[in-house]
View 1 (tube, helix red, strand yellow):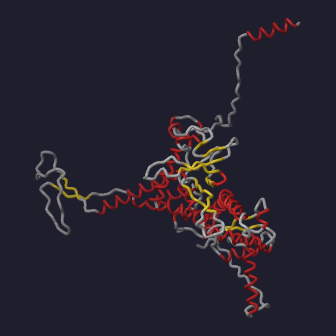
View 2: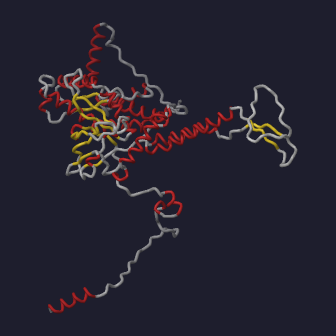
Length: 485
């Protein structure tokens, strides 16, 4: 029996493989058409349209040369295009405002107020709000923002922590370290793929004094790297203006063409031509000869010649509509409403204005949360760590805390109709669907500070006899008319 088993295995191993038929069942719709993806078809038209599509990874698609080219073009566009400049400035103004405000979540109110006041004093000394705005602009134009947590003895504060902003051009792998597997695009990673060190060139590659490869090896704990993660495996950021660069170029080209057409039509340009056939009778004139014409003077043309004016054929009447459509495409990649990007809300009414801004304000709120995690929290930890080493500067509670419970508050957004917002706020508070902390946070204010201030004001008003306790405040509720412009 053992021999039969061995024999059968040998025969199966040496036998020629038989051809296997695979039957695929095609599912057809009721109309007899097979289901498929049109965008996956390889027709001549589609192949030509998608000829630049590739399957590169995030690091292969965002090489240093590609990022450098996009970065330089985005900077040029922002420097020479008022719409691009305004969009970037508006993003920074809406996101940062007058600057973030720290609010601790400890039970001891006195300690919280003391620490918050100390941090506010330090933030004002280092001009934190201004540096955050610069970082947001770099985030939009360069695609990423860098800041080194360093020491600045020149600060007029007890804590000498400071933020040194670094342009993205300086974060790159030095030539002498090229080929090191653990270093990519100026970032050295550990065995788990986490950034461990950043390589910062001491001189900007664009300096006219020359290019130097001297570098600083900065630990990741002392470096803030803020960028938008678009793809898994991405380590460096890419300009937010990338989808709109070609649109900005088209907008400038069209504008220049319209101006050139208007100038041509306004200029006193004439052409002398003849309708006489060849070998006909006409006065002799030199080809391409120029004749000066005076203003308000009637002249006599040579025999057989006529005078005609150059006409600039250009659809200047559609210029405004073209600009609006292009700006709608441009501001879409920023999540910005057209009215804010254009700087003009002509044609909007109350409802459309609120609806357009709601999505933008939600984007700003999400970015503020990301700013707090990526930038402000590391700054707070470094500030608290240095402050804890200074005797008597921070309370003992801050030294023993491993995690600082806190929130970041930014400037609130004013409502289009304050009366309607006040009525809605009153209804929310009466129905217990909100809190005073939440309502004050919408305005970027600390609810405890505001209530203490309000209590002082009411006490003083009572002392001066300016408040009648028998009177009940009356809220005026206006009729809702959202369609009114």
